[in-house]
Image 1 (spheres, rainbow, N blue to C red):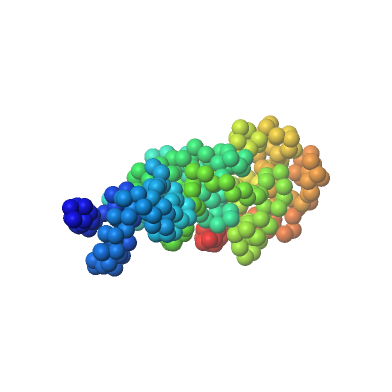
Image 2 (cartoon, one colour):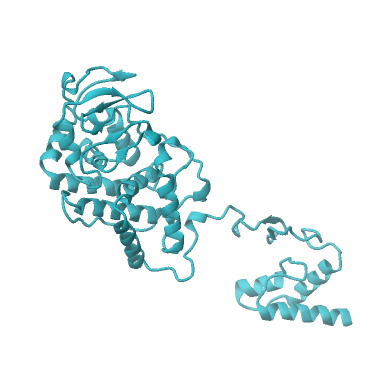
Length: 370
């Protein structure tokens, strides 16, 4: 009788404090039903199970032994890692819910805007990051072991810290990366020489990858030494026309190539922190010479002032094939004009406002990929 009183008191204490574990760390069906259905039910059966487990008997379906330190017991009695969600699948770290005190979307937007304002050098990297994270679907993640992402590793770690520590995961990491890219586009266009202030639409609803810190998916990216960049953009992002794809290539007006990251070296135009039509003007107004890339076995097209174009860029203006080296040269004027795309290059070089509108349209198509 005394043993029954003690066990009954233990079960009552468990119910009162709202815990779901018994004396050996295992779930009791009665308490679980209280949590799930909001009422006390079948407590007699729960008490019986508690008595069996604490007495070293059958211990239910899972036996009398408790789960390990880093495990928890599922309803069926099986022990699973604590890192798994209640359904027994790995928790989605990139999609986890907001942390306590998470700001709303307007406040998160202000955090992102202030962060970009602090350092304009972040603008090119954020535009490149959103592009790379949307290859395969905009899940907010990149494979940091991929050579194509070598120049983004430091920036991506900064983004993850900003998302967790200041935005407090108020939106998914996938949405956060797209928001950063969206605001970087706005910042880049309104800088001196750009097309002026633009508002780029942003919507939430993207799902992040399961584990941003251990993302191992491998994707093919357009390579600078090749000439198929337009086809890549149209097939991977669903860009519906060559004109829009040529407009999206204008993102190369931002940033520079660095030998240590890509093997290529130089800037595309003379305003690498401004998102503008200077990329197209630079392409048309320069005699380019074929030079060996300083950090790989390929070639690039170089000017005498530190500017350069990749085969993927100059192929918008000139027609050539590549078999280790371009099929024409050694200067760009020896290559015939590319009838497919050169008219778009001229159009965007002559009308920056038109280019900005077409770029934003293409960008929104890209970031809508799931």
